[in-house]
Structures are given as structure tokens and as C-alpha cells.
Amino acid sequence: MINTPESVSCEDNLLECMIELENRDAVFWCGENVKGNLHLKLSDGSIQITSLRLLFHGYGKISCKGKKDEPLQECMTYLKKSSDLVSQSFVLQQQEYSFPFEETLPDHLPTSVYSTKGHIQYIVQCTLEYKTSNGQPSIVKAIRGITICESLDLNKIPKSWFESKTEFEQRKFGWFSCTGGHIRLNVTIERCAFVCGEAISFIGKIENKSDRRIEKVTVTLVKSIIFGETEGEQVNENIVTDSQNVLEDLLAMYIEEGCFNKIVKKVHIPSTSPTTPTDILLQHQPSQSTDANNRFLNRRRSQMGRLSFSSSAGRERTSLGNPNIQRILRISYAFNIKVRTGGIDVIDVNVPVVIGTVPMTDSVNSGDPNDPLDKPVFNVCRQDKPISLLDEKERTLCNKAQLQHVNKYPFYATLTTSSKQSKKLSVIAKTIKTENSIMNTIKGVVDEDKTTIETDISDY
Image 1: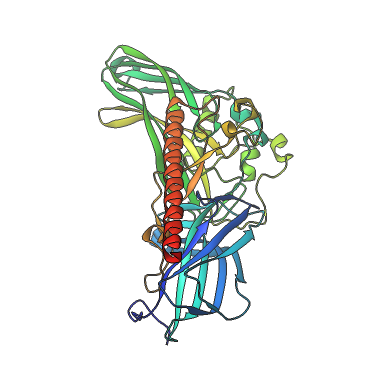
Image 2: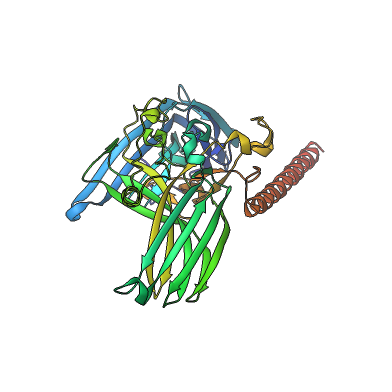
């Protein structure tokens, strides 16, 4: 009989079965090696290990309602590699023992991402079958979640994404322009491509020549997760979009009638999942010399979550993403600028942007990939929730923290273009890591001294 959580014998002497990864952040790039150990701990006696299997599993899942409330469900396996850590049955008598493992990830995998409507996640799982000290067969699982990131190098996308972009919008009130007046927004965004941790400048002016008060002018970084396959400009009719506000910042507020405010603001980009590297990114943005009708058309397209910009030069560039990946979702971003008066957003502008994983070479400190000042840290995205990794009916000896996983993404706090807030967060994170390292070192020395003393006493 196999032991279940309800039928575990009190004579079972296996106390711990946990996966420990060398990379404590548990964040990996495509093609990278994943190294770790399965750590076992016994209370006393021995166990007979009959089977020990290792599984690397990555999959995508969509579960939501589409148009007309029709269910949209889809599953896609991206990674499934299994191997045996032991070749034959043997008796383990040591109180603590570790089984090392190593696996190379495929060169092309979609980025880990979480959404209430679907997700892509990756796990490392060990399944141990053994006999307890009294010969009772049992099974236990150890599991760890990992985050996988696709590389999106900002140095490989068109330079037009790094040109400043000016947005002009006007809203008139009343039957005639002379009765209700108007509100004008003119704002220039420094660039439309960046990495997390950088500060993006917004400069402009908001004029209130109306008979009402402007309550606030805000900018919001909106993440759109688009479910359903897309091919270039052809969009599947059954796609569903999940929009999340990554950050919201004030550009101006409380502007009385007849007044204007200058806009000078640096917006800090927090940690979030990168833009999906597709060929759409290789297409150039429209020039700012286009007329009002084209600007309106492009804005309407951006509101539908499509980066529909065309250029013959862009099509000649090398593909960023792997065409062999069958994507069930993709991620895009836009800055959403709103002007509110009377509790209503009278101006609403969307500007598509790109969030990469590799910064521009102009913003790094030395250009040396081994320089710690140019390396990212990995932070949790605040909008993501922990993903449950194991069924409650399956037996495990992992701690509760290992049974859930929250994705982390690259965050650059030490670039020349990084915000002051990012640098402060980096200092705090490094201080915490240093303190933890010191405490672990002290604990290791104390445990070593304790073992030496116990050995000396037993010899005596």
C-alpha cells in the first residue's frame, strides 16, 4: 500500500525531502544550466530507495470565457524532460544525503507569466519511491518553481523606438468653441523602449481654457496579456485580453479654469515581465509628421492591444522570437495618459512601449557582462500572485514556501539611466542579502563547532 497524507505511518523515518537550487533566485535564461540537489533527511535507521525520478516540466494554460461567454480553454506543453537519479534500488543509511542533478534548458522557451485567465509556468519535480524502516512502501514528492525569461535585447530593435514621441490632444466643450472652452494636452515621452529599473522622462504642458476644473493628469503603464494565437496583422477572433495596471503616476493635478501647468516628470519602471519578442517589434513606429487622422487611427489600434506599425525596412530584419514556439499568449505594454475632469476622463491617449531584458549599451556602466554594476537583480512583480505547484492530495515534505511560486524578472538598478528609487531598492536588497549571508556563515560555524564538541565528548 502506498502511503497517502492520511495514512502516513508514524514509523516513517523520512523527515525531509526538498529540492535546493544553486541559483537562489530560481530565474533562468533559455539555454542555461539548472543545477541543484535533492536533500533527504532521516530521523534514524534507514530507508530503501526503489525509484527516484527527476522531471522538468513547463506548460501554458488558458482557462477563461471568450466572446459570447464561450469557454476558452487550451493547454500547451513547452518542456518535459525526465530522468532517473538512481539506477537501481539501494539502502540509504546516512542521516542526511543529497542527490545532485543538472539539466540544460532548451534554447527557446516562452517567458513565465501569471494571469487570472491563464499562465505559463515551469517546475522541477522529484518523485521518491521507498520503503520505510518497517518495510512499508511509500511515495513522496519534492517540487520547486522556476522562472524562465526570453531574451529581448533593446540593441536589436529599430532605433525609432528610442526617439522621443510627442502626443497632442484637445477636448472641446459646449456647442461652440466659445461657450465651453477646451483642454489641451501636449506631452513628450523621452523614448518608448526601456528595461525595468530605468526612469522615463515626461515633459509637456496641460492647458485648461474651459469652464471646469481639471482634477488630475495621470500616466499608467498598462500590461496587456493577449490570449489566443496571432499571426502578424491577422488577429484571431476568439482572442481575450487581460489588462493589468503595472504602475500609475501623477503628471499634474488641480488645474483651475484659465490656468496651465508644466509637466516635468520621471516615471520609475518597476519589475514586470518583459514584452514578448515577436516580429511586430521589428516594425517601425509611424513618423510624427503624420496627420491627425493617421494619429487617431494608430491610437485606436493601440487601444485594441495591437502594435500595428508597418515598414518595409522592418520586415528585412532578423526575427527576434523563435517562429517554432506556438504561443498561446503574448505580452505588450502601453503608456496610458488620462486627463480627468468632473469625474470623467475627457482625454485618453495610448502610446505603445517595449520592455526588454537587455539594456542599451549606452546606458551600461562599463559594458563588461561580468561587471556587477551591469548585471540585473531579480525582483517579484507586484501584480503576480503565488502559483500553487502541487495537488493537496499528493504527499510532500517540502516547506509551504516551496509549494508556491512567484515569478521574478530582471531589474536594473545601477544603470546610468536607472531611477533614484531603483538605486535605493538595490541598496536595501544588497544589505538584506549581506545580512543573510553573514547569518548563514555564523550559523555554519556554530554548527561546525557544536559537531566538533560532540565528537570530542564521544571520544572522551
